[in-house]
Image: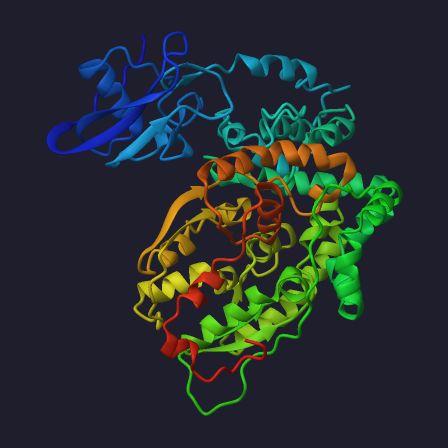
Length: 550
């Protein structure tokens, strides 16, 4: 007997307004949005609302669903821009429903998944045992990977998938990795995974909205580490994974270095000898020593340690100085934490052992500061992602006593101060329009857009566009000759969108994104903390400055 789910109780009180994308590719040139008012549904989901609309209001609406219980993964759609399962998302008012990205639209919210059949055949996603073992003790990674319900939300989120670069996407990575970790499978899967993961940029977007919390980026990092141990590392990769080493050399010759990196013959030589793409942007070096506050009798309300990343220390010290200044104005005791590279560049090349050594050294100092009552503040979203997410998950560090919750992105920290009425800054008017780029690593932190909320506190300042496409730099990948074209293809939608906006200033929390926006879109880009400082009232700016060079 066919099972029919009992209709949930509905009332006409407190109805929900929902906008749904309507699009028939055979007839329409572009999607349009139609608004529906759905009655209140007791403990309802968006799938319940879609079923109600289809049965009671509009039978032409097309959408996919199956089990209704988060098992089949067929009801994946975008809800307010985020890939989600309609059956697992509580109904709310004012939401916008759209089809998943990166798939052809059949009609309305239904997408065509048939294009995945050929990659499944190509990658031979079938177990190939020689003999079934009597006892199969599977590793933890296997049990995490088999939770995948093939909802394909990860493909909708992936900035590399469907860019015509030959990347099958994280869904196929999950399936291949599942066979790789399956002790019953006897086929060497590492070569196939190498071909697949070579185009994975570790942006972590496949982790962000996975309904089963599968950390594919963590697992792919471990697999890349296996590949790293089997191959010889090029000198170029060894060098660019050590930004502090380059930075310390720049302390003595940074003016000459900045001229040299813009010299065409020198760039051609770098291209030929080290395979560093001559057309790729290279950061400028402006190293200035950053110090914390002078000793004073004033009693502070809070204590924080500001972690200075490599970019803030050697390339753009303005971000560090402005961060320290804003924290100081808020009567926060600040200690500068200059502990070296966070280790993220090592992750990019698969050198997990070097990354772990960096992590252990940094966490040793961070724990001492925790005992002294400090919280850790980071202005680089990539460093924040490394310390707050990768340290606990990859290396099991900062997992005790809620240590992760004492590490903050600076925007998130300042917004929490504002929400607790402890944000002690008043702003003057800034009459202009700006844009804001939401970097991949900031999205991975799952803290929303705190700097957009902070910027909107500034009178007359309009944040008119929020760009959330990937810039394509992917750490050091954008410098490599063999990956440059891939980087350009990934970042081209963002650059086109920025150019079409007509804006001349795009803020971003990520240094790599700032560099790519300046180079690709030819517009100014810097950290939003500098706008906050620039908008401070004169009485605050003219206070006795306790920070060197500010």
